[in-house]
Length: 488
Image 1: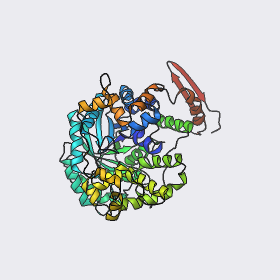
Image 2: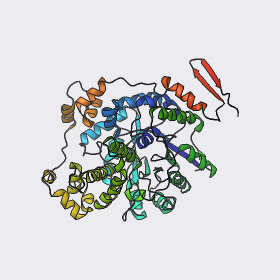
Image 3: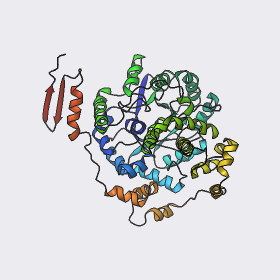
Image 4: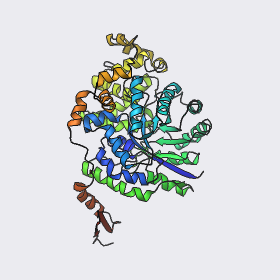
C-alpha cells in the first residue's frame, strides 16, 4: 500500500495550539465544504477541553458548532479528541460520560480519539465501550513520552494491550513534539509489530522543528495515515503542514489521498483572519534541546503564554518552564498530556508566584498524591514532595474519599429538571447554569466571519504577492476580475 491518507487537524489542534482555542464557529463554516471536498480520512472538529472556553469566553454553544459543521461536512467522518475523563480536570461520573457519548453521536460525530493519561488499558477499555455502545468508532492514543520507563518494550506492550480492545484504529501520539527521526527507527517497528492488523496513524507537533521529518519517517516505516494542519495553523507548536508532508511524501514515491488545490484558498482565508484579528501565524521552529526537558505539549504552550500574559507574568515564561521540568521529576515523570500536563504546569506557576515550592497546591494535586488518579501515579512521586502535599488539613478530606457516581436521573435533576435538554445539562456540567444563560443571551453565531468586512483586507494582502496576477471574485452569478498592474 503506497497511498498516504491525512486527518485534518486545522480547526482543532491547529487553532488550539496557535490561537489558544479562540477560533469561533463562524470562522469554520465558510471553509467547511472545502474541507469536505479535499478527501480527508477524517476531520478533527473539537476536543472536550473546548466546552468551557466556548461557553465562558466565546459565548458559543459547542453542540451548535457540531450541528452547523455537520450540515456542511456530510460524508467525511468528524472526530472529537478526549482524555481519560470528560471534564479533564475532575473525575467524571459514568452517567455523564455515557450521556455525552449519546449526544455527540446524535450530532454526527463518527470517531473519538481517546487518551488515557498513563496509557492504561483499563482507561482505554471504558472509553472504547462507551463509544461502541452508541456506534462511534474509537481510536486509542498511544502517547509517547521520554523517561527511563518509556522504552520500546513499554510501547510494544501497550500496543498489544490497545490491539486487544475493540478499536477502530491506534494513534501513535506525540503531543509534546518529543520524537526525533532517530527515535522513530525503533519505536514505530515496535508498535506496528504488535498491533495485529489494526491501522496506525501518526500525530506529532512542531515545537522542535522536527514534526515534518518525523511524519515522513512514519510514512517510510509503514504508517499510512498522518495528522496534519493547513497553514497558517500549522508549524510552530501546532502540527506539521499538510502541504509540506504531502509534497515530500510524493517526492519519496508515495501517492497522497488529498486534493491540495481545493485547500489552497483555505490557507489564504485563515491567513487573512490571522492578519485581521492579530492572531499568531505558524512558522517553522528552530530546534530547541531544552524542549525535551520541560516537555510542554503544543496545545498547552499557547494557553500558558496567554494566561501568564493576562496575569501580568508574561516575562516569567522561561522560569515557569524550568519549574515545570522540576515538578515533573518530583511527580515521577508522568506523561505530559491532559490533564497531567496542566496539573504540573499549574503547580509550576504556583511555585513561581509563591516563591516557595508546594506552599500552595490545588485539590487535583492532592488527589494525585493520595492516589485517586492512579496508584502508579502516587507511588512514583518523590516521597518528600508527596508528604509535603499530604501534610496539610485539606488532604484529610480526600484520604478516604471516593468520587460520587450519581445516576443519570440524578444528574438531570441536579443540572436541569423538566424541560431542560440533555445538551443544556452537559453544558451546565462543564460550567454552570448562569454562564450557559449568559452564553445564550449573547449574539447568535456569525456564519460569515472572514467575508464581508474582511474582503478588503484579503484583496489587499493578495495584491502584495508578486505571483498573483489576477483576483477573481464570484458570487450568485456575478463575476469580477481584478488585474495587477505591477511589472513582472
